[in-house]
Length: 466
Image (tube, rainbow, N blue to C red; front, side, top):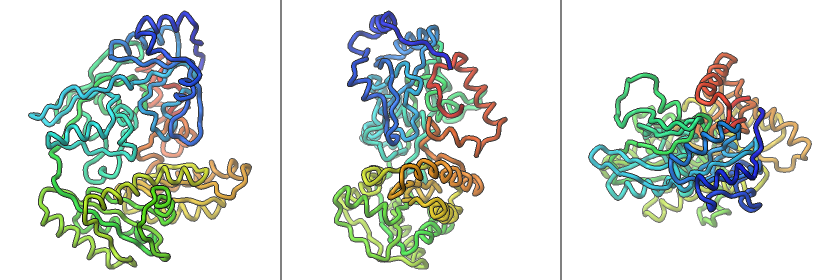
């Protein structure tokens, strides 16, 4: 792609648009915005802009479109696929100053919010009104709603409540040419033309910049119960997942952690949880609702059902502190793995009943290529995070075998009826594998959609496909 470099005159133009304090190009800022949470990748922008309104973003994009500057939208920088990395340099457009909760509509169970609001801040604000926004990525304490929109994020609650796309009603967005539009309407049902709102969800900042978001909310459940179940077989833990659903129970969370995942995390967060030597995996299972007696009956039914498997003693979280400790373990796994070794995380997903085959297949591929894997994830969704660990592999072996192993894992996912990303997106790092789930016609259609929105190709170039 042929893009232009940013000149001192362009910098002065941006300063006039949004104020000198919101135009950064010092070495410290360039370094800070050169990476996200995707392993150790760094791509350096020429400049970082921090607008405060849709109108300012409109002026920026109109100018960038005219001048052929590549624009990389950025939220909190918590992404895991390189989606916020400026791979063609140019400018970073940060939405961190668009951070207001504009209106909580209690009458209609809706909220209008800007993209720079932290997910947990939004959840806490609506909870005070007795309302619930369920999508809860592991990084919910730092990630932005805008980034969640870009990646169609999920999290543990997705098994019962769905992912981000299930809550987005309407979006204000700025197109690459600077036009500002709304994509839909603030209604629960909408059969009016093409669904531009859902097209934007998961588009990874390649079609425009979202500046306002209307989300639907639901009543907040008043009670929840949580258990941690140790299994002497990781494959049996995966098999047990679908058994629970076949029994007519829909947990609010059902999380899988392989032995090394929980042991590494226990050291990382200094947990005093006891794990027996023969335990190979755990399931963290939550049920929620408004009827305590019904929840207790559901949990007793789950516990009885699990007795058909080779399990250890079930830990029932008896206090809020104990629940928080167990959830801290689960939410800290990714950080713990990252701190333990050089690794590559893959976000695989298959139909829930195929999860045992996926896990067994990953372990066979692991042996074939000589690396190690540590698996955990949202088992209730069939969404398994496969962390490929370098361990003792030499650099040459690691570089040679890694992409081959990943390709075979992804081919297995597709063979099982799944795909190559459940919630992390494609971004920069997964695009070499897009020809596994999609054929040439499907990819061509996506590229043509991209071209309609962004004919000059300035929006987050280099992402999703070549």
